Image (cartoon, rainbow, N blue to C red; front, side, top):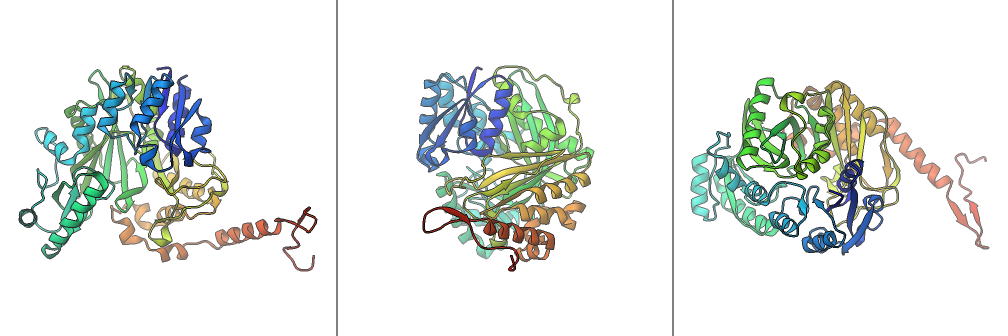
Length: 491
């Protein structure tokens, strides 16, 4: 491959391009009108505007992206994650255009993209499954009968999507009818497919996922597990590798199962097999047929560059290492820094990024897609960056993450940095005694106020005062002078 187009934006587009350039390959960025000044656009060797700000007019416009790729004689398209990364029709069109889709085959994407199809396809491979329906349900009476047989509480889930959309927990039979209708409506709205299924609701699970790599020659390896249990709205905020909850025996069983899943769908490239883990038992959840947001923690503990591995596999190369060559080195933690306000139910807080200062030092990595003075647009996922740390042990990684959070400074918007600091200081996280309900069990907006250090408050106040003290104002003659505001009133 001589030239690769990255069909994405922000931090993941920039992260992918860096690896591509290290391989001596030219990069092409596509961007919406809202992203014209984004770092990934400036960084790329070539950049093309593909449409207006809404995703439907730009990053989801597969035909326009392929048109640009053909015009610029691109050899491969890397979809990143989100947008078109798990769209089998886009993958088919890319291949039909004579361009390599850097990811699995359309057939693998289609099979694993539908949770019911995935469960059906894996039932003969001995993969543990959560008790539930094997087919979509739509008739309310039939669905209620099935739920009663499984036993409440149950979980209603959209068959065609994820991210918490079309997902409802039903504690009692009396609430089932209304929750089923809501789930079907949400699924239709979000995915264009109202198919839902029912599973036994596991009350206190951990969310564990296994990274796999598979080449075109039948070789499949795992890169150990990631712990992804700290979530809000069923979406991850903090991930770590390895998991503090997994024994060597469980790890072996879970990774073996993940490799079986990959082989069952003739997988190619980087993928992630997700499991629920509860009381020593694990159950298949789904397979994500793309690069994951949290892939840097795996890169830190294995020393592998997953984007480079994806490209090598797409070029037809065999994996250059065996399973026995891959070892766990230390511990890594990732915090997704979202433009969200944890004090206001994690609602997006859109604005202009000001006074942007990244943390640094040994074992700290920042994957960001914005720079000082750029606006966080309302059209896309509000992630600003990923803050990742690595250390020799989990306790050292937690200490390093706290330092990194304290060094990471910006103003103009609220973010999940304060929540990350709360998690790092919480007893539940430090002891590893937590599950996917961490936010509900341990967090409240008031906790952020309780945990604010006086030094942090003083630093914020001083920065604000300094900014005001050095403001430049214009007099009547339109010449500039410093304002008369001073730190002490006698000067």
